[in-house]
Length: 345
Length: 51
Image 1 (tube, rainbow over the protein chains, first blue to last red):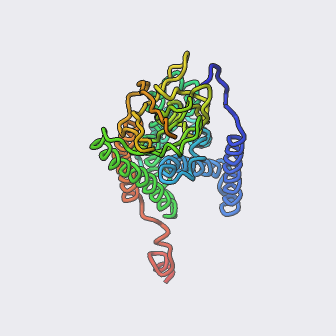
Image 2: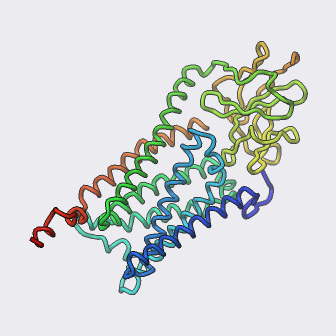
């Protein structure tokens, strides 16, 4: 939570992440070009770079789409999730370079406007005339909107629900790019290796998202059936004053906090800003503080202190036999809940 | 909110994953034959022409 905007809130982790990312992309392009020139000396540098940027961009997109479900299945992937937006912007820039090279190579110099040319050159009745370039252009436009609105400024001004909905556009962009690659590059490619890789990629992405989604569905249904039930999240003795404890209730991440000597509250463990892990943050000035960007929430009602307006769901809580019990069904964001008290710690 | 987002993601992938795979399959089934198969030694027209 901040009253001013910074272009990027740099820290050591982000700098290392971005350095590895940029070196990785540049190295891939360089190696691809060098090997390409050695094997196919007649192919122009523009064509090789166009192909290199295309493969780099689609590979990055696969990595981006894999991070979410992989982090759900195993927390070891969470560090990749923390800075995923930089990965997305890098992917867009690589795809943009590919598009510029394609337009310069195939669409510039004619009597038709190069952008219009993208939409009319594939017109025809057979399969090879499928408008694959139009699909690539459409995907690039979605990725542009996402990259342009990736900054916190837009997240705050569009509000988190609108921003998250907008950024679900990457799923549609992915399907459009599958069409772009399948009806374009794969139609003329003589080696089946790329087709096999594309198939493996689409199967992995779709399969992993559905696998994780279905795992959560059964938990959600169980939660629906037992929504009034209280479940144990920890023991009172597990809690240390002013240090949040992370737990899961059903499939919801929560943060439990002991404060002011004997009060215990439970709120959603997911920051409203960017789904940051509130239970991994500090308890400062009477508020849970997100470790990612410093957004703060009061433990008793899940609301940010004035003048901020962010709110997260709260959970009814009680103590029984030294155990901290939390109601499975969360309260609407910002609902005040009487803290449990633990006189007999 | 977390549950609403999960439902939305689930629905999106339930529709989009089969669409992506179907597009890939249609494209591959309708593409020109793989030329590499014709040029394998002992197969196709290239060997016949040599003989």
